[in-house]
Length: 315
Image 1 (cartoon, rainbow, N blue to C red):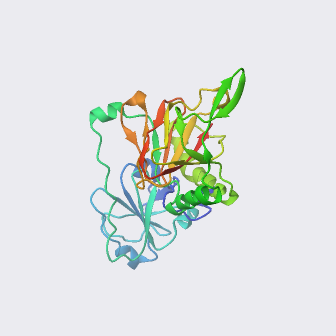
Image 2 (cartoon, one colour):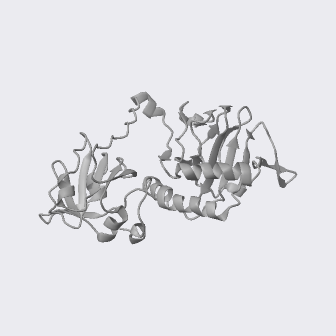
Image 3 (tube, rainbow, N blue to C red):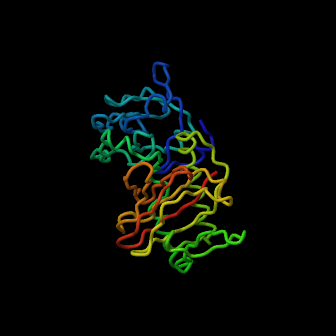
């Protein structure tokens, strides 16, 4: 277990670090090896009475009761375990956590509960034809909280005066220079000017996005380009198909990371990866889209409203 990960209380959006769970009979198993792959309820009752009063989980949900005493008798199908005290302290006491099949915390409820929490609606499975054409991308939900997303939009529009028109780097007569080129892209952008906001963004990437990139792509991020806040306005927001590491100044880039800040407040503006079919991708507010910088991709024109996003590049 990563001790640093348990140095503070976990929040919705965090993925649970691995831990060894010990049962009353002395047997043990690890969280990631045994309990990933299905929705999870994780309860930390304060006493035996609270353990007995735990609600019955829905079918298909794994229910674990974790605390200092594995002999607490929760009702079936709950399973009781003890775990590392720091790990338990980061969960908190007297709570019921809901986590997804990727062991990412989703919601927290104080015990006792009079009504069992409803499980999130499952996403429909893709057909074989759809999976055959799906782009090799990673979506990480809840990287930024809604409040942080709203603060970044205010920072762009108010503190930074709406940002500047985005330019592209061109090579002329052996010299590189920036110029606005509507045939390539139209958007407004700015590098954040508030150190506190930038620190919050960095901390969220470190605890939520980078561990997923390491696990899914087997890649350890050691470098990050500056954050950019983006605005794609109605009728004037798009980025034609391109790759993010084709010129010498950006050849170091390995992965692009983009966080939607206001999904649902606009139409259009989806990502598309033409080499992998016609599917469109528009993550929910606060979710990150991560993909290789060598993949051809585009941001389709915004048809209504303004799409706000944060982007950076990782190496």
